[in-house]
Image 1 (tube, one colour):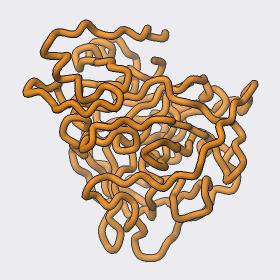
Image 2 (tube, rainbow, N blue to C red; image 1 turned 135 degrees about the vertical axis):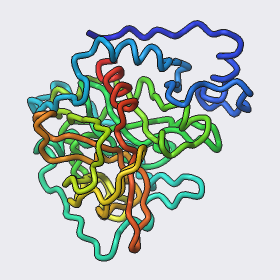
Image 3 (cartoon, rainbow, N blue to C red; image 1 turned 180 degrees about the vertical axis):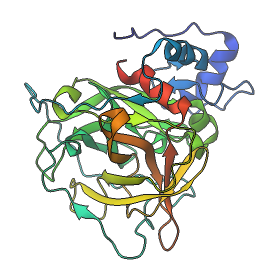
Length: 316
């Protein structure tokens, strides 16, 4: 059932706390802050943790959300032509620039209409280029730094999402954003443990592209085989590249791996190619930061909190 877009009533304190997140606002943050796991949007919407918890209590999805292959059919596909953008850069983090570990073992995805590659999208915006992945008919997951800069308090604008892109080929056309959500932890503090975002699209493009399953567990994920596929800025523009590895280190809010990536792949799914609980490809993290050299790259782990949030927005 689709939830109606309800803008919560603003108390004075909430209004002050929200001010920095309103579209392109540069207002200083008030002393009163939102909880780190609250959600805020570029339209001024606030979703409280309590509301997400109430929804989770009624949901049948407790640990895993089911993948969907898609029907490959999209009527009246729209296409937006945009100028080429550079990969997103953020603050002191060298996002993706040093993300190739040793030799570059990435391989190009030549048939991007094959699931699940069809459900992986190239994102272009005023901030730069990134990657995202579908989790529902019109819901896309990406990195928080792909859509909001907590240093400048600026939201991405002119966001164009092109799933299954293969260079100049756009088999499913392009979609635009109608609302973008980040966690207050990312928006207020730039907390990398909360570096994720959800984009609500203007088309139900996911029925054609399919979407990923996703899951959470409190257990260690070290040793779990995974794959990362996305749109790097060092390859032919708009082409999708992947590399398989395994989780090398597990932390509460982050997972570490030796997959080769590059700037532009921020927001890519870190996923198991098949997981029974998802009945298909199953994301366990969102790729966010590159270290390169002999270090590990890392992503925002899908915790129970993130899982419940994605479920809440899956059919928003």
